[in-house]
Length: 222
Image 1 (cartoon, rainbow, N blue to C red):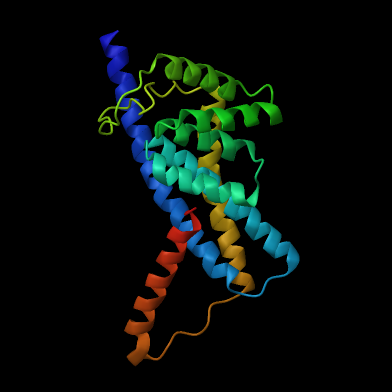
Image 2 (image 1 turned 180 degrees about the vertical axis):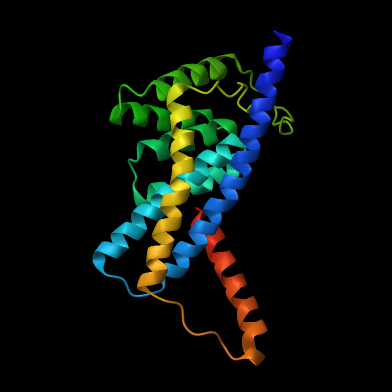
């Protein structure tokens, strides 16, 4: 039993390392999407870019939930739901983030909406049962400091990974290639302007990076 627990802990540590890299990667993709959106696009290109942005925000939310970074995940999920208010993955992942922040009632509402849209969603069914059990047992008390372990602030430990969630993580990895391909197509369709004169290169480079980084963070804010 001790060996299995140690293996599970090691696997969880590796999963969080991967999730950390993924969350940063998806932020970079959002940055590239913002740059591409500044150029003229045909309607079909705009729709493709919107779909890519939605998928990227959803994947960023999932990666941040794996890191237990509930606040940033909530921002990413909120932004995704602005693009598609009834997106099942967005609602589910926001429920996980809300539960982690101790907002059980709001998390319950999102899970109920998921089950309205997808009644057979086993992850939502299981998460709702676990959440209601934790809410029933949790005594009312002043807010405490965030836990240092994997235990969520609403009093329950994150559930073990289901086959559906494992498949979703594999799909996220496949999205790396899809996102890179979409960005490459956008750059090919709209080549970047010629480089600035050598004397202006430093200032222009610095301001571009600052502006794009700001917009990428804004893309996942409420």
